[in-house]
Image (cartoon, rainbow, N blue to C red; front, side, top):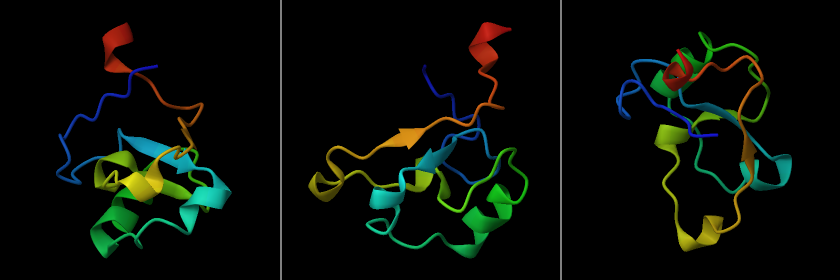
Length: 78
């Protein structure tokens, strides 16, 4: 399922909210306060929730597992 990030990485929304697999979550840098504020507005937030636009993909994260929350709606389907 394509994930559409409406704000294009500006942390002005939570449309790119993903839930990171527990075994990967500790390998990510900590979320900054602005990201945590946006996650407070997201639906179906979990302890390992992040905004995917804030995850810098590196070789260390090769194989990263995330899932899209069930409450997510993709604007392409409307």
